[in-house]
Length: 408
Image (cartoon, rainbow, N blue to C red):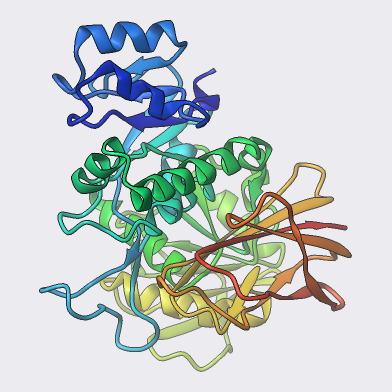
């Protein structure tokens, strides 16, 4: 099955078929080849070894190629300093939100992210993080080596071979835990949109910016909304440029009247509900509807950065699905098994020095857990403080990735 393949872009500098031996003892079982990157002889030998061959121009059934970014702290022009918003940690580039969006649009497809290393060769340690950045959200990175690293591996240089071993180890880690990709995202805030056309910029930037603040958000495609779409939600954002169709409006208002919160603006159409009071948030009026409420922006939404931060304030941090402390520039993915008895919180740390003294507060009544990292084959014990409806996890020193596997 295509979803079980682990793709690797064949380096153009690996001309000799003998280089196929480098894939021995690795999980890479699929070669993505650019035109002219590999000879017919090499490809024939690869097929004899049982490797799948994929042309990016003709993706196989069940695979969806998505253009991605190199994950990490976004640097300012000149690559000398990190970029950030007006406050807070430097902005992080990640492929997680795009993988989730493409997976929602194309159920049953495996998203393969095409993100090549930057022109300046990255640190070797950032390659496992690139693998984790995609796998944590249910996708696959097409593992792509920079030219220098590929050449050094072919020459058998010790440092390069050590890096290659770590890359293969990270890929195997996620291949061995493919069940995690079948877990469903846990979130309390949903974004209702088609994320395309006039709504592409606002909708997709909301997903991107909410992820940068470690908010676990859900994608609700407005042409596929059902009663179950709002399960577990405390609030939804509707920021599309046109008012919702009658059926969609009814679904959303049903959620609100049952106790949810709607965050929207003038484009919604006639103001729903009746005037009410609420938290003092400049630019918003509050309205009541059944058991729920509406935060109605007084002006059209123009800045997704502002809306993302306002939405977090409206929902309140007390309801965060995951909240990280002392984590620096980090990202997280919280997913649960269909039976709700097992969950995994995957945490990515985008600084190259690793982190110490990280605490993660996770919503849910979990009683046992273990911590996985890419540094060793066995899980570590994890220090847990049980709370009424959440658990606090105290992590040991970790490098760029850690996954807390939890059970009720």
